[in-house]
Image 1 (cartoon, one colour):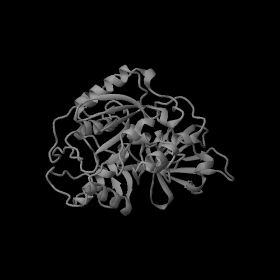
Image 2 (cartoon, one colour; image 1 turned 180 degrees about the vertical axis):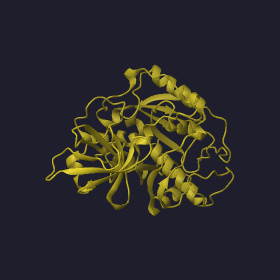
Image 3 (tube, helix red, strand yellow; image 1 turned 120 degrees about the vertical axis):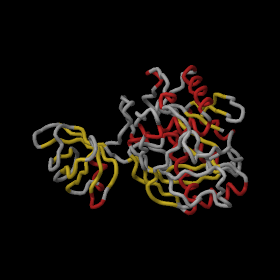
Image 4 (cartoon, helix red, strand yellow; image 1 turned 30 degrees about the vertical axis):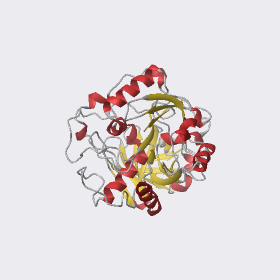
Length: 370
């Protein structure tokens, strides 16, 4: 069953303030639920508007043999580095993206971090690590080089970063990783995937649900709110995507069989919809008329940066069902789920989740949109 498409060839009238809502501070989850699949699950049926209250371990009741579960196998790196300037001042270096010649784009916090400034990175390494500011970019962004190269030393000097709204410490850093992570590169977790346990995945596989993997490295901008009142003016972050040929084959065969493509998280949604744009011969950010047919091919293999920005009006071509967490107000992710389910339905679902005291954001509860 394919969701209805809405033309995305021309922007529709939207206001960022329409995607704002009040969340009591006590509903921001500070620690994860144990076991992972015991988080609550709000089930939203798009066709009827019905809402049910379940748990993630009830997910097998909603998936069918032949459905394809698409999971993002990225792994969060220890991207948060602490250090000191030569003057003794404290500095935080937050790695964002590897660049050419062993350099990183990073967000730095500290005073007077201009070109040439050196930061001694704290950590248990022989001889130490020095970060040098090579270029001042926009705001706190810098191009930073490391001596020696930082990549082999990250486990010794880095910390797994948590979102800024989580203030509690995490005893086990692996709890901010999915159980199926494989490819290092994210600075934030694909949080919908945090709810899966090996037993739940095995149960789904045993009932005939198929699984496919994409790699989309999540950037820090995933937490950045939209400040412009017209969300079309917001500059979407780009993230590195690997959408392999085997995953494209599984997606296309699922669609040809008439089964459903189930995206786990907004990162999988962006990956699938990027691959659908590539199948149409378009770049990820190109608009596409809803009546432009893919033929037999729903998705095409692709690797590179995707800056696909999904707003209400987007024509979904590769996602039938979505599992997602509850998202920040005024965020591109809240706009994405509103595009998929309809804004009125998402508004009603979020209001009910707040009334029922669901836990929100990265370590919070989940929503299944059918």
